[in-house]
Length: 133
Image 1 (cartoon, rainbow, N blue to C red):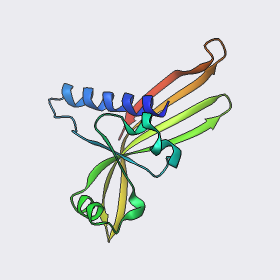
Image 2: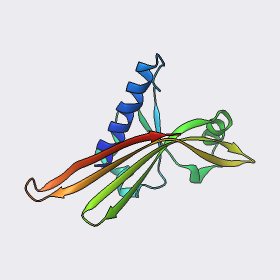
Image 3: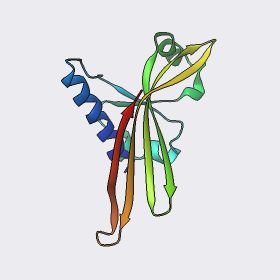
Image 4: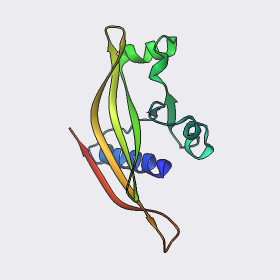
């Protein structure tokens, strides 16, 4: 479900860019914070095309400092369980350096709601919302 939500969000961004005559991002960064370690080790999640994972916890690393200096976009993924639904929020944020620390600003978001279907014995996407500032 997390993989499907991330891929769906990327498809929406690519489609939006193409319609506007813009070049879609070549690489999408997903922030590891918010994902459990089992998700980032999972082959299904790690093998999403054009996705790289970054951690803002290690803001002393040279590569992250370099990225923060220029600023970059990163997706933050949050998962919640509510009654018989799993809600996955994907927030596209701008990340930059502010007084030596990462600063995050939300730009766009997607919310994907899955509900368990006893008939199909699987989780089914029941609602998809895309929005932005």
